[in-house]
Amino acid sequence: MSEKPVLYYFNARGKMETIRWLLTVAEVDFDEVFLTSRDQYLKLLENGDLLFQQVPVVEIDGIKLAQSRAILNYIAEKYNLYGKDLKDRAMVKMYSEGVMDLNEMIMMLPWIPDPKAKLEEIEKKANERYLPVFEKALTGPVFLVGGKLSCADVYLLECTLMLEEKFAGILADFPNLKSFQGRMLQNDAIKEFVKPGSQRKPQPDDVYVKTVLEIFNMKT
Image 1 (cartoon, rainbow, N blue to C red):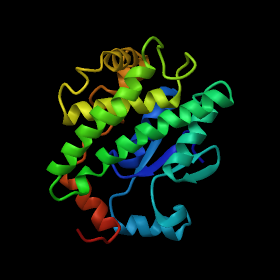
Image 2 (cartoon, helix red, strand yellow; image 1 turned 45 degrees about the vertical axis):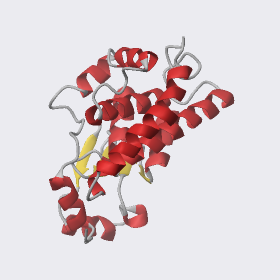
Image 3 (tube, one colour; image 1 turned 90 degrees about the vertical axis):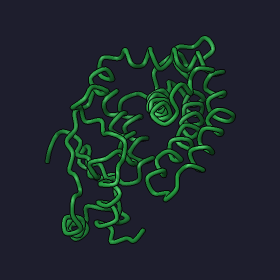
Image 4 (cartoon, rainbow, N blue to C red; image 1 turned 60 degrees about the vertical axis):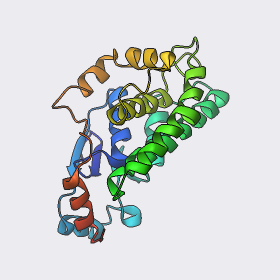
């Protein structure tokens, strides 16, 4: 069994990308197994490798973990990215859930036939509901919770970068967030991860959608 975590997913962002981000910040090397065909998926099912018959699945420390939030929680706890005490942990979870709400809206865009209206909704909610919360939280502190890097900071960085891919200049009215993003991008591991050729995945495209539909035998 590999000593490195093994990530089972598509060669795409989706629900695995945040896991890649968190492992990167924890400075953990990982291997990836990409699902490319329905036969491969069925073989993994037959072998009992896919709990709940779905991905992402991460093999780590001799166990196979399913469900993205369970995987993220395990990594965050293992590598001390979850706050120093119970109160900090509650705040980390609260901010994390807020980011995930926004993140998941962006993640669903490839599956929407006409995403224009959804893009408008995302931009409005980002500007009015989510980004102001993080802008206020970062008035003074370097990190969101307890003056210490946590998984919530990692999720927020990923989300702001995805927002900027869709809405150039969206952080113009949120200087604390923009400064936070700049600080996070100075992290050595993150610097490498955002470079071309890293294990960070590009924005999803039609090939990704087609692959997922074929593997799961789904129709649009």
